[in-house]
Image (cartoon, rainbow, N blue to C red; front, side, top):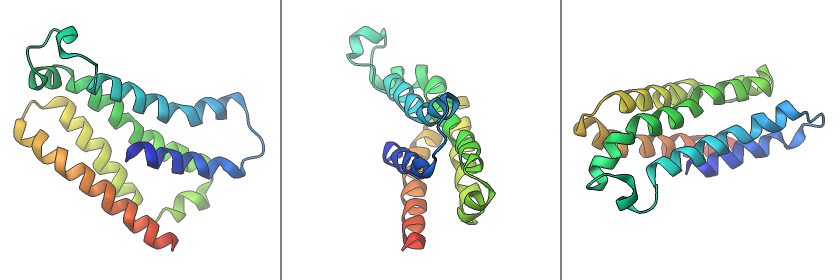
Length: 141
C-alpha cells in the first residue's frame, strides 16, 4: 500500500518542468527507503539470518526496519512543502496528524519490544493508512 502511495506522490511531480539532479534524487529516495525497509523485513531464507525463527528475526531487526520506514513520514512533509505552500495547505487538516501517527508509531515500534504494541501497530497502521487514503480519494472526488 505504501508503495502505491509513493507512486501517487511521484505522479504529482509531473507538472515540474525544471528538473535538476537534486529533484531526481529527491523523488527517488522514498522508493529507496521502501526497498531498504522491505529487504530488512523480508531477507530471504531464514537460515541465512542466524535467527532460529521469524519472531526472533523480527525483533532483532525491528529498529532498522521501523526507523527506515518511519523516516518516510517527515520526509513527506518536506516533499509536500517543496511543491509549494498552496499544495501543502491543500492536503487538508488530516495530513499532519496522519504523518505524526506514522512517524511516532514507527519510532515507538523501533524502540519497544512489546509484543502487544507490535500486534496493535500491525493492525492500526494499515487501518490508518487505508482510512486516510480513502478520505483523500473522496476529497479528490
